[in-house]
Amino acid sequence: MVLDRDIRLTILGHTGVGKTSLIKRLKGEDPAATEKTMDIIIERKKMVLLSAAKHSKLSLERYRKYNIIAVDNPGDFKLRRKWREAMRRYKTNGILFMLDLSQPVEAQRVAMEDSFNYFLDSINLDPVKADKKAQKKKTLFVFVVNKMDTINYDENKAREFLDNFDPVVKDFKMTFPFAVFERVFISVQDSPYEKIDDIFEKCKQALY
Image (tube, rainbow, N blue to C red; front, side, top):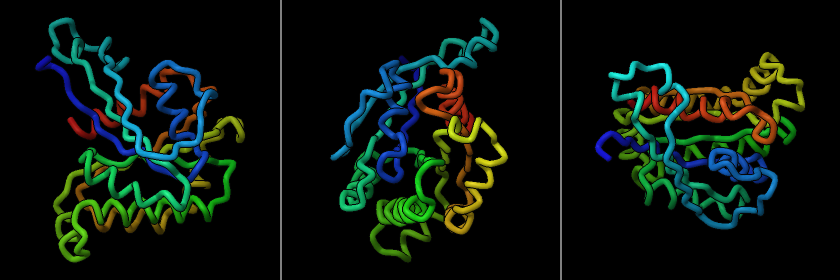
């Protein structure tokens, strides 16, 4: 329908951080029933965001559906070159980068650096041209901190954890000055669906 809008996201992160589990929660499937992702997988879900109910019955937004197009990628180090391919081929609106509070910081920092470099490569393999285009590109970076249950949903601790990635995030911000940056704190396995919906609500607000 003409009312429908797309939200296209490349979902990245170190292996085992919950990328596929997040997609399963979005689709209403059991997030525990996952297998290791070995290739690029395209998942689609058409949904009315929960915020639609807050709009007037005369508002188009009350009836608008969003096509969530999630590009799931393997997190294994040896398979990360597929990230560049996914971002180039599917021309997503941005990156949803997942972090796991229970995994070592350094391995996840390297994965975040890889996501940054491969995103630039997907724009142009010439570093100078890629940087030039990035300066004008409107895009979206959502950092999702998973396994909040391991710290009793203490968002202050989660923010301290995110501080470990500040140098990489600063590079993102300098290279993409028109990008929108969002943070979300969840437990993919246990958080209420409203928290999952909130991720895509933030994406909607950033893009539209």
